[in-house]
Amino acid sequence: MGSNKTLIFGHRGAAGTAPENTMVSFQAALGSGAEGIELDVQLTKDGVPVVVHDEKLNRTTDGHGWVKDFALAEIKTLDAGSWFSEGFSGERIPTLKETVHWAKATNLLLNIEFKTAYIPYKGIEKAVIDCIKAFDMENRVILSSFNHYSLIRAHEYAPNIETAVLFMEKLVSPGSYASKINARSLHPYWPIVDEVLLDETNKLKMAVRPFTVNEEAAIKQLIEKGCSAIITDFPAKAVQIRENIE
Ligand code: G3P
Ligand code: MG
Image (cartoon, rainbow, N blue to C red; front, side, top):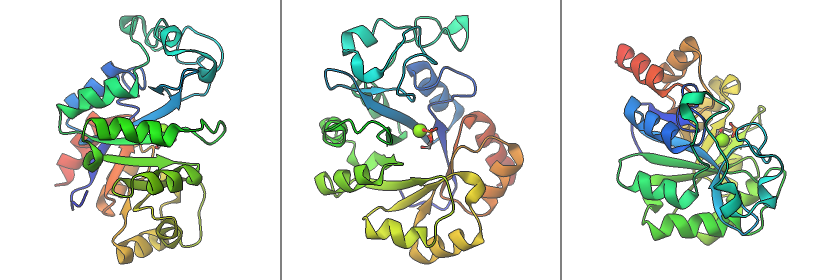
């Protein structure tokens, strides 16, 4: 993933302008000129990795209840677009397989986030990695999680796939911590990115990809500070801001 240019990753696709974590959102991110997309993964009752952010279906679909309590066939009947706007009605929760299959034909990088902070989803790391391997996409994927045990399990199963530490609050020597668990990069909440963090990661040549950077001034500042990437709900805007800096 080495590059001097700050890459743009569309958060949940292009969540600012399309229903998050749907194919139409990923297509919007691709159309914006972003280099990558971020997406969240959980397991259905029958163990299929699906792309959805919340543990419950309530906010982003017309369903109610926990993702983990629904089989894929039931999940696929749900409307994942209307909540955002009527023009997106009929969008579905994508499987990870559908998403990786689609991405394979593009040049996009994929940041796949294990949503294992509250529900462990036993076996999710292997299920996700098997899907990535089936499409020969190991070199285009970054696996991240707030649950760092998920990163350790992922690294043990597939040491060649990059893992990234997600975190919300300032840590002492986060780069050193990441190295200790064999993670290659940091995905911090953007307001906690400071000179101390950037000094350490520069010395370690460790990638930093802050999330979720939506304000123009913050996007500009983090690009100018040389972050490896930014993760944003508005990839088209971020690409434009980056062009104006170059
Ligand atoms: O991966 C970056 C970001 O997506 C982490 O937070 O809650 O938006 O998944 P969240
Ligand atoms: Mg996420």
